[in-house]
Amino acid sequence: MAYTSNGATIDADEEGYLIDINQWNEDLAGQIAKDEGIAMSPEHWEVVNFLREYYSEYQIAPAVRVLTKAIAKKMGPDKGNNKYLYELFPYGPGKQACKIAGLPKPTGCV
Amino acid sequence: MDEMESGIVKKFMFVNRKPPHGTVYALEVLEMVLISAAFDQDVHLAFLDDGVFQLKKGQAPAGIGVKNFSPTFRALEGYDIEKLFVEAESLAERGLSEDDLLVPAEIISRADMGRLMGEMDVVVTA
Amino acid sequence: MSTLHTVNKSPFERSNLESCLGHAQPGDAVLLLEDAVVGVLAGGILAGKLADAAQTLKLHVLGPDLAARGIDPAQVVAGITVVDYGGFVDLTVTAKAVNAWL
Image (cartoon, rainbow over all chains, first blue to last red; front, side, top):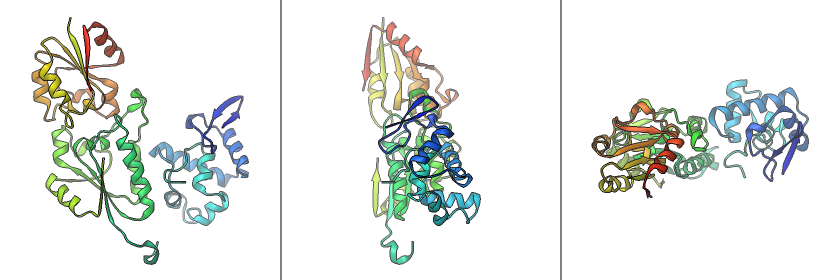
């Protein structure tokens, strides 16, 4: 499948994950989120931006367990827990937030 | 995970013997390691023979059209995979030293590496 | 006119490099690329053999493969020339024949 953003065609896999992370932009993120039934709030952006930083440092999309722990370490236990993250991304912070952030599907995620 | 849920914990060792980028072995093992982390097993990573090059600092494979996955080794700590062993003889034979490594690892002799392998329940070598 | 020999397997794992060096004729060019580049560090156990071979052969190593594996050209055995893809092409077109030791 593919998205259209700012007049450009952006390729994605059959589940909607971007093929090339470098083609990501904020407008596209909003579009993917909308398809997922999510209205982006500052809290959503905080997680999405965190994921993009994580990817740029380690070159992988983290497993949910690892993401939760890393967010707890950086933003505190109020945000680094399953309840908070699943409220923001009901179908899974790994799957949904990674897709919105333009990352590949987390390794080990089926 | 509590004791009831965790079940049997086995000693796993993933043995890396190939240099990165020329073949897909190193990346495939790394993905296996990341997945294994979800199963709460006692995971050990060994780097010997040309596998020591996987942990070499300063890898820049853009010029050969390959993704640089070496930063992912630094993420292993977050996956609670912290038992990394590098064979001293393998480093020395290749003109490398502990300073060349991009993550902290325990440097052990070939004899100790052999003994450690013998203590494992499951060994996967590539 | 001489032959260009290419070796792309790790010399620690296979005998390709050793066999190549044993058969190459004086004046021939040898290019180490892909996984073969792991053998070229000056502190490694193959350094002596490569330095000897460089007396009669023109030894080269492919720069992008060195960079991929984090090997600084300054660490390479003296007498081995680092070439880029353009240099690889030049070696190929100036050789009488190319022998790829796969």
